[in-house]
Image (tube, rainbow, N blue to C red; front, side, top):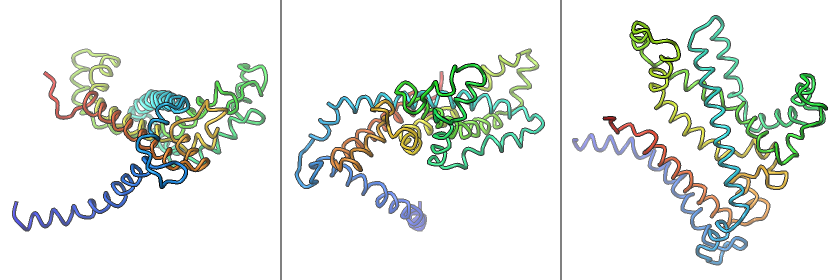
Length: 292
């Protein structure tokens, strides 16, 4: 590489480096600094006390548990529904273009608006969900299920809203992956007498593995930091039944003004996500690893 090439490379790299320093490294340094100071005053150094308080808090583990359940449940449902929809749209049936456009419409809605929509739909007094279930004979009363105020259904209700909002993303990514599979593979399999199920399990699914891993990883990160929908629907209640790490951090910071404690929670949250991402990238999908 010549000197001019190095200068050109540095010229292109500099804006990204400045952006990373100003909007990632600097805020991260402030976050870590705040996590080792007193929660109330922010001036007294307390070392790892905030981390100890977080790791010994029963509410922290409850919020962590709810976060894991929310992420696994929402992403699994989105993957299954998204895969089915992608397979259907990939057949190119008449009206598939219009159907795909309609399915993508939730992506155009802000999470906050989505939360408001589902808050009305899941209302136990006049919500359309209970009304439909009552008319179908599933419920004895249109007020039987308290979706947002019953601890048994609160987290699941947030999950439903999240699935409705983000399943189109999963569908779109998987559809692009399916359309990128060479048709010659299916033709060869068809000539060899492979049925639809065999072509799916031995061609479509293995070919989609890298796409699925990336899509699931992106959605896991996004679902783990989900705040808008949960806050609009339940605010982490009733009690702490739908409290996740994002709502716990918000309450510590905004409601109780515990800056240090909230910062420690945020750092722990970030470390947990880095561990999950590292596991996915090194164990589940490693593009540089060759299978023997």
